[in-house]
Length: 283
Image (cartoon, rainbow, N blue to C red):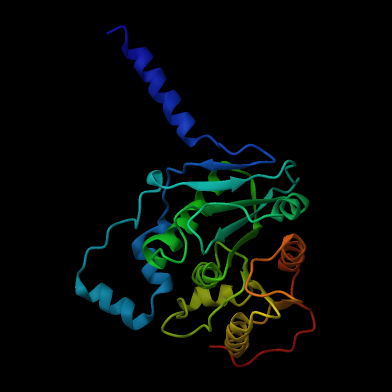
């Protein structure tokens, strides 16, 4: 049995390699994540993101939901790590794309470097993927695995997206305000307190009211601007006031370029004005 120690050593090495960070500082690297978390379970997603009536029907139906929607070891993620680590820990932006590829948008790395933000996104999480079966759990698993691998400042964890991904990002910010401190919503958002975007349980919604939400859209993207106006109106009606809208001149339905992203990221890190009037319309 002289091979037993060698086999044990190789097994331990394989485990350590599987859990080790694969992204090199200053580069965008494709990585594999292996760990799920309670927050990405089907039961928790239903509790936080499904309307009360639908949630009750699911629970009363007796259907046994699988523990997790997917196995992260079968997925690919892209992680960008800034060259320099901030003293207080990295910020984190979890990005939900409208496309299939896991990629960092052109020109975004400079702003991420300047603010000390790690960027993570999942492959096969575009508009053709199901929100609850893939896009939402992939974003949650990405956030949880990055937290385990890097020193992250919990006050600087945000979710973002473009177009259809932006609409999912708002769902995540609303349902998981204990994970995400806000959202960068580029070219699209929905009204809250609807069948498509129901309110979470009351304790979570109270946390969400403090979330920082930055809306970005081109002045030529009339569809996104209409959606943003309806979303902002619904937020104000529920006393969610820590918001900012940035309209980009001479831009249609396209993702924020380097300058627009840098401005949006700066805005995301600001707190709301101290002189906001008291709100008495919230639920």
